[in-house]
Length: 285
Image (cartoon, rainbow, N blue to C red; front, side, top):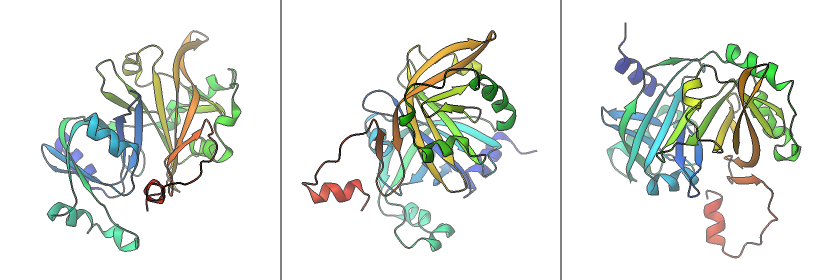
């Protein structure tokens, strides 16, 4: 039988895995990014390659405590970790190794630049996921509660990320000590365009640690198309037939999709371009 360390090493080496990367925004709330380039270099070091620029790359340099959650391509096995951001490199042996990953023979745009290095602080053992079982209770609860009052928060396309059977969801929040926390949340459902509902199982003890009135983030990805959305809102604890459950009323929506990531709700009027260099950077050019 493989040890925990051996299983984690195997998982890190799998190019089909997904990593959800948690950082702390300037406003003190959690931000979550989807990666596919994290590898363990040794017992103390993890590295990942940047493909496009966004909030997480900025956040990690000022608030260096980060968290990550890695799930296999079948979305049945996962492990979680914590790390501290150390530095980045734009050339050298590690950069060359990252850009020699076989999948890049199908990519004619650009590779990973820079490579970000983290000091590994904590790594859990393997956890098993049963999204179907966990979701049944949430769907039963969701069908009985008020759907919400701002259906324009999420578009028809964004709703699909929550409803797709191949999807995966992750919850993020900032704990009392100021460190970001991540939990798998495949059991969550969307009652309408603005309300996320989920039951405590199987992470009730950890969910109970979320401060009252905390702003949480929920990242939903449609794996077959690798399209995703990040929503945020205030977490509310309530119950139905004496069974506890959680509600997040969405008050902001962030699109991580290229060519331009950014908040899409609340909507802001278009602004004229006055500085082309800045505009090109925002579009990852």
